Length: 305
Image 1 (tube, rainbow, N blue to C red):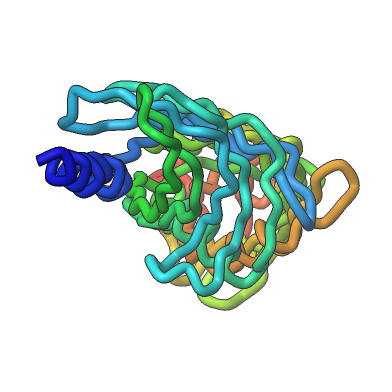
Image 2 (cartoon, rainbow, N blue to C red; image 1 turned 30 degrees about the vertical axis):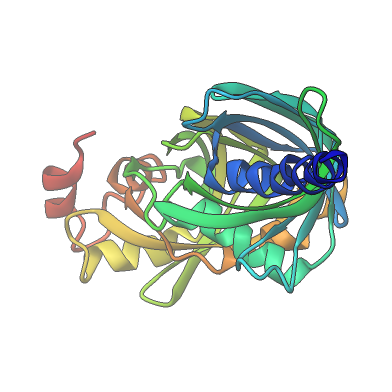
């Protein structure tokens, strides 16, 4: 009888210890991560400062302690080509727990990070994955290793088309205006100084620059200086665009932060198709071109802001 009791204790007692790691992993698998704010700051060629608030969402009423762990961000769930490595802080995991990330994120695959940046800036919605391993503690149970492979869905800026603006031209073929860039996402982007080429139907019409660009969540008013070939613009208005509103294609050619080119921003922004509907009649009037044949009627119709 005593032997039976000993055997029962030996066989039964380890079962919870064997089951607990599986239970812990199931809890992690069933939880969701919801990013409520994110800022990509101080960009450089190799890294950036990541400020992110993520909410841990689960149906379980149980709470556990998660140790800090090294996470990789990937575009695919198998995470064969991670693009950023980031340190995830420890947290008391329970539904509604906020996880605050504030550290330098290392870019480990520029090609994949370019794809991520392009999605964040150009799409309405995009997905990526947070992958890694860390320790989980709960009460008197032995600590166990859990694997994270969480799909995160976020809203992007969706800036294939810029809002309409009127006449960023002025005297001496150069003018300063303020453009509005809405940001419906929870992400913020510190870009730096942007330089752009402008064209209409493939014809170059000038360049534009935006200094110290920081795109915050919500509406953004950003100063823009445009240097334009006014004669080329006048020819377009006297020809196919008598309304005085030009469909200007904008291509970002340079992004510089703190004196350094940021290639992953440059490539991502250059890949976007940006269109700016530009009202130019008032600027042509300021430039003294009202007397050019074919422009008179256009002034009457288009000088409205």
